[in-house]
Length: 377
Ligand code: SAH
Image 1: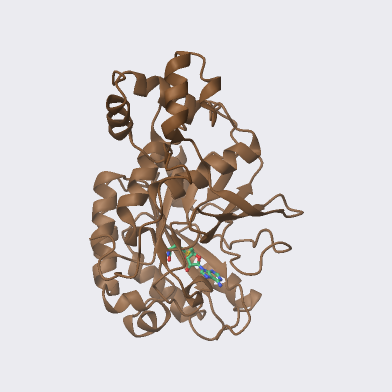
Image 2: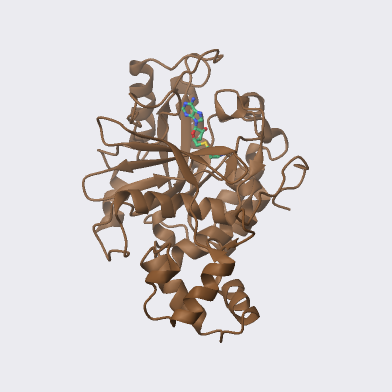
């Protein structure tokens, strides 16, 4: 279901040159099964889990609660491997971006966006993307494949290595939040994304709660329901248009799952409240979707849904068929949405000096509308 219609996607290799299996990405049951196969009792899986996901070790030899013999046997058959970072750049604003290379040579990006007392890691779910949203640079890339659970999780592991965030600190974390807003459509790779997120949320490991994880989708409506039931992470919808005619053009997946069906899935997302809102992302394109009438249509569309609206100044790339809306248009749009009772932050582009495209990563919420102030009390 999650990869339906994407026969070109292929599975990446899971073992290293010596045919050793990477343990990153195995869930608890699979880890226990591996241990059983080498004659170890299943409870050892818990000890191993602690070393891998709480302490962040990559070397079996340092796992001092395990017998020497067991450690040696593990090292013969398994590795604890991250993807390799082929580019590691830091912006003057602190944003840090890695270009990661996976075992088959394919590459994807991971970005860390630090804030004063927290930080978000923007994670990719696919190499490339099949959706061909007209304004998105990733859609122009030729090759597409799903990332495995191991590769999705590997992005978090590598970022935590780089930021020195092992063992998992209880609070004050540099990576306190995870956003699935990197390359790819996470709901077209649902199984692997879900598996990786379950491991990220596990309280005896990385332990980032579902309230601090946001999955962004272009609108795979049937999978939104499943995501709500099984993961119940925060949801962000890349809306960008308020009528089907325009959205069909900007976000072609709309032809399959039109706005009414998408909004229905949003309304029924489990656990919505003023404290847990859906984020509607709206990229501001000059003369296309940036008028006051568009803003009013947006308010009408999301009426009754606990929501906030992230306005994203379009980040142009060479050959892009759009221009960014003017500052005045963005601010007028934001005011209309704000005055209707929705937070409407304009995202400040981060890491401009190190990134070619994708200024979509950072939100800058200053004002809070009345409904949200009430909810906070
Ligand atoms: N496929 C998912 C997640 C990846 S895109 C989704 O569509 O939500 C993450 C966000 O960046 C989306 O809201 C996307 O519409 C936006 N985006 C992509 N290209 C952009 C650009 N050039 N300028 C501004 N935002 C962009």
